[in-house]
View (tube, helix red, strand yellow):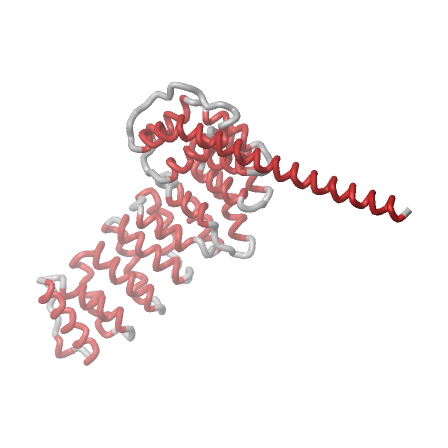
Length: 340
């Protein structure tokens, strides 16, 4: 009896060892097969994608095979994500049928291939892919939800705004980096609609969106910037970012939005308002800026003094200034003389 039990235990142990070796062998074979496909795909497509990323117009001599589609998509995405103007790269993708493969892979439920398909649809997708990306984003599984939301921004930014708003309302958490990066690359004017919606909820993302509008000099977002600045009780960060954007894309007539904030209780807003008024208002607003030479905050005094000194027609009676205002004015004169 004891011998039979021992023999059975030994057989079970041997069977488990064999199964373990088989499993390891299968994993090793799959890895080797993937490496072989990757090397083969790199050899066939790597050079072509690199030349296309450099702006060389090419016509692909063959179509992408179904077996290598996920790997080729990953290679294409790496090149596409590293360039700003990729007309030739997109043309190669269209000629080789990558868009159809991206749509097929995006319909999977998990895995690297699924991720590659979702990301690629942001650049290659059509209107019919919007519903698919929305469905993936609503599942809420990370990192797939972030990737699909970023692709939705690239494909159709206005269609992504309702989902972005819902994301922000879930505990006011910041947007994932991949989504923020997609917003930076969104078409001009696309951010204006999102800023208008976020202004109603005082979202934490609104200052960042306003900064993007300013940095990109997106004139289509001017109405959204004005809509934020007409509310002095808006978040301080939003007002400061809006003033920065206004100084970049505003018209001379928009100086009134900044001049109203010269008396804002927060010094950071007043500093940015001084810069914007000096940039858009010209000499007509120098007397208003001169009144801030005696501002309680040293940075406001410094920026105001620099703006007043920059106006050659300005006349300031220093004897009427307080000691701290005189100091700020003299420092500004010294800095301008040194710079000249």
